Length: 174
Image (cartoon, rainbow, N blue to C red; front, side, top):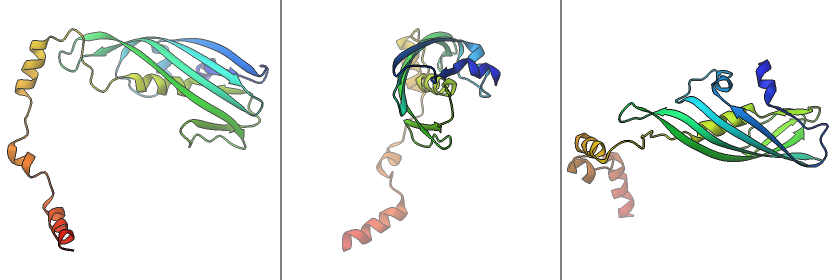
């Protein structure tokens, strides 16, 4: 937990206005979280822009770098570039609340805000669902398409649920 403190942005001594912070993220950062990643060997730069106002803070977090993924088709490792950006408004209140999507409330007595979770989420959202290496040949893709399961014509024609079809008939009569 102490290593997460490296990602505390102390705002209490800062003047109102814009402030920049930079972080280099590698596998040690992701080991701080108890989840398994779908990538290895992350080499990520994080640029944080804090715009401090009297009653709230605006964070803009940009990530860019490379992660190593395993191709879903060939099982080969390949470097995948990632780039993402999020904006978060941090306001002051009585207790911590992150129930709103882009607004986080922190206690008014706090003097720093930890951005580790935001960085982690930003990276995880940048990982594609389908991991296809740029080295996959057109021949491999054609073979994959050839042996992929196809929907039969009967399934395509009768996609509706018979129970709903009966209800639709009742609706049409009225």
